[in-house]
Length: 251
Image 1 (cartoon, helix red, strand yellow):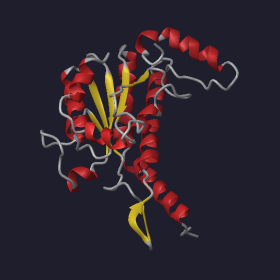
Image 2 (cartoon, one colour):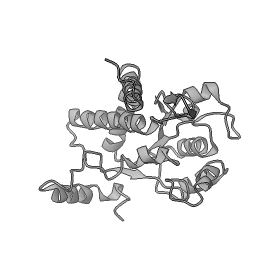
Image 3 (cartoon, one colour):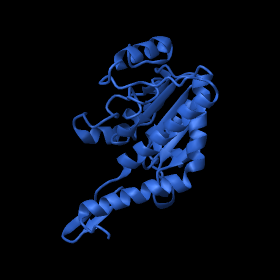
Image 4 (cartoon, helix red, strand yellow):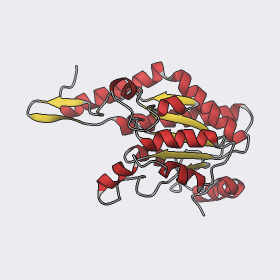
């Protein structure tokens, strides 16, 4: 029996979006996971970036129990997170030309590394400029976005393109334009965004693919364990020592 409560409808919508990822994004997920495994095996470094709420999925990959220890957060002051005041400043900074290039040129990113860029709309200056600049530096780019925005909105950057146009692999989250799954009588605006849960699940599927791909090659994937299980801290210390030159969040 279908649950018609708001909670039930939202969970059903999220399940539907996750099922679409499983059924329709298997190819891109496999490609992205393989690319990450290649980067790890070849001595490259891993970075993730997202602006505003897209940063939540990026942060979910970094220093995470069960995750790859080599994933680093690429930060842009005032953009990563909603702790900046006023919060609208973060949105404004996403549209500032030159900021992404300046950040990349000041970052540890170098040829042979890999950057995951998360942007739901993919239309602002920040993700597009970051992708183009990163690829010019010889960095592989995995873009995580909703392709629907490219068909239903206009670009908001000088190139007239979207993030999806500047990536080595594109992961389509399938989130509808507006990122709100529910409508309700007496509620004027659509509500209940699902992009965070769906994007995080999509990226964890990629990371699972990468870990298995490394193991299949005979390479021990540099995974972290929970610090709340016996032996977890010792395990993590060993991994961070072995891969310390590729981990930037511990310095």
